[in-house]
Length: 124
Image (cartoon, rainbow, N blue to C red; front, side, top):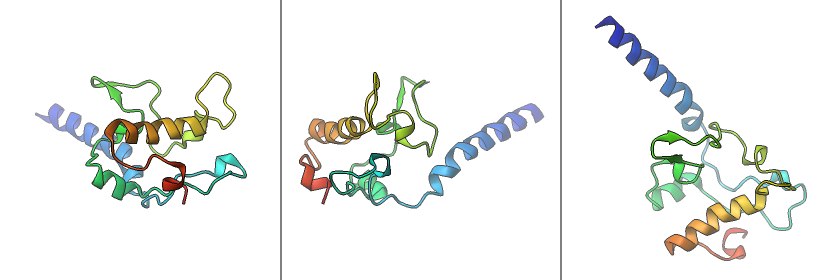
């Protein structure tokens, strides 16, 4: 019985260590664009919590690399890790940051038939 309690406590602690950074964040209002230096357009308006509520998204993996059949995705970022760490602006042999944002956002909007699809609808 004691062993079960120790395992349960360890799992709870591990879950808290992973979840607390995400739960303690302020709601994002725009997509971060500081990596672009002098961007050509304003930051895309994106209210993270409102978006997820309207889109009925409970799983962070729906946008943040997700997982594959319950197996962790080896390319999955750690909570709070900036996208630009793996997607540099001028990527050589990797997906550049702007393309990663656009594939993720516009691609999902196109596939679902919902949400903005033109530049000015996000970059107001």
